[in-house]
Length: 451
Image (cartoon, rainbow, N blue to C red; front, side):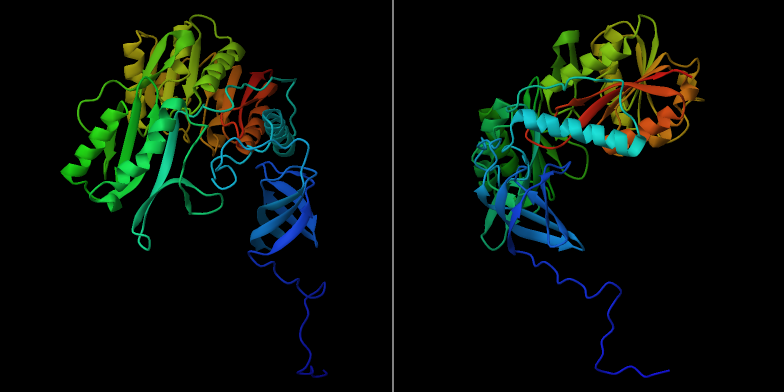
């Protein structure tokens, strides 16, 4: 065997490896289309580039945020040729803050992107097309968000507390001078809050803060060390001045800092008030939430006296309207505190035929005492991971009608395929525009069992 020359270097198959793309490099690109997450897609030098803040057809200088293999992440640096569809961002922080990623796109184009994303995921992962596409459920494009979390961090170098939203693709905090997606009561609260937190004797104790608006406004302050009494008093005075409740959370659950009036939200169409506490899950968009409930009930079309199962029921957001229309409702949730609050909500609204139970929703359910006798219809609203283990049991629950509310089209598609294997047909599907100005897709799908 011949010896290798020490001057020869081994070359992998296919030739030499391309040099990497350094972070911070600038590149001129033409954007081909939008990805599901709202970033523009471009192709250059054998790589796929994902670019924040651009639209199809635009030519732009972009700056590299990071690269891996043949994929480059970048953000808009300078527009060379803008799309006719581009619109001015309403918020001055839109290109920096990580909250809104699509303010430069029209609301119609945002909805079209979400519709394409849902259709692509159903086709790709389940080979499904609904028999009917529903029109997107929409609400106000701005001033819709009734719940928000603000990041808080002590900057040792500056000796200053930073308060705001996280920057896009970064841990940096963007200080806010406006936030037009918040409902009006929270806008004024959010803008006044940073100065109030900086005036505390021990601002380093603050972890983060959350804002809520419903039947009343509330501020939840999470703290990593106990707050001195004078800081609690300062926070109370701030909340009193802004007509908001103060809640505090250390190592345990959130608690009101003094007497608190009931905190909840209304579902006017069904004359319901649902009580909740900071830390509970509630939909951020009141208008779309109410439209979503109405569509779910219209699609399920439950008749008085029918048994309906509401899985991942939370506070009773769907279960109580179902009960108001005459259904016998069983609500099931994995979190004990939420089960208790849902039961309390049913009692306060005079609904004796809504009952709530705690269960591990990844385990078989059909043999549970509350499931005996089966159900006429099922509604489920799972988290982003979906409900794969649960939907594989659907035929055992006896229901022939299923409404699936999803915050992740990919897991919806996966679970829709599992329903299809049990004889359920996808009759309708549509987008819920719960988060305008973002690419986040929520959806609803309706299935009927034909086998």
